[in-house]
Length: 71
Image 1 (cartoon, rainbow, N blue to C red):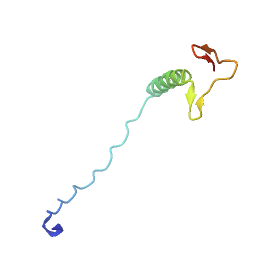
Image 2 (image 1 turned 180 degrees about the vertical axis):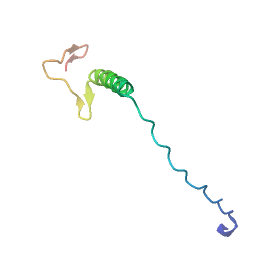
Image 3 (image 1 turned 120 degrees about the horizontal axis):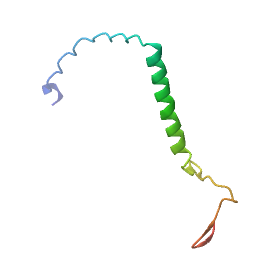
């Protein structure tokens, strides 16, 4: 009985977005420094992951002996 469903209330009017505050050169430099630090940490963690979409990403020379034999 779809005709008995209550109607949704109308949406409120959309408010305009506030303008961004003006930043000084010192604040811009600090923001850039913080973003660069985050990127360095992110890159460092990514480099420790040895697998990718194609499986293990190591060369034959990097393969080591395991308890079950050679890889």
